[in-house]
Amino acid sequence: MALPTSGPLSINAIRVELGASSTNQSLGAFSDTAGFAAPDAISDFYGFTNLASAFRYNGTVGKPAFECSISRAITFQFWHSGSNPLPANGDTCYTSASGGFVLPNGNYSIAGTSYTGTPTSVITISGGSGVISSSILCIS
Image: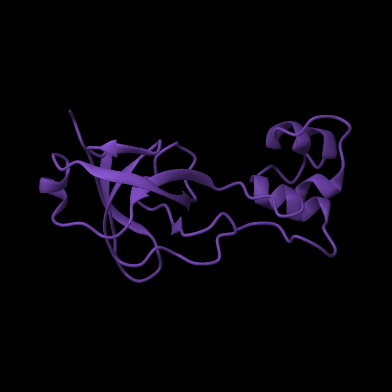
């Protein structure tokens, strides 16, 4: 979930967002991990999120087994809690970088970049919490 855009912001909140160890609470190390340039400042982290992003077709799609061969405009960005470029089973998917709203239940054609074509994979979200319950890799 994203850090606040204003108000109090602690080193510990930054550490939690980055998933860093509780023994290493260095602003310099956190700034390096987040990709910020020197000089280091806590204010750099206002609104920061450690969520990864990918792209999806705008809407849910049909049965995953058939979707790998269907060309679509995969141009809508979404965010996920995983550590890989593409989301995987168990990751939570969000409609914004702030992590405020989860993707609704359904099947989604996804890719790592925005383009029109066949998807890289198809994910299924179920249970109402934005968590991926299954995914298939599309082999072209």
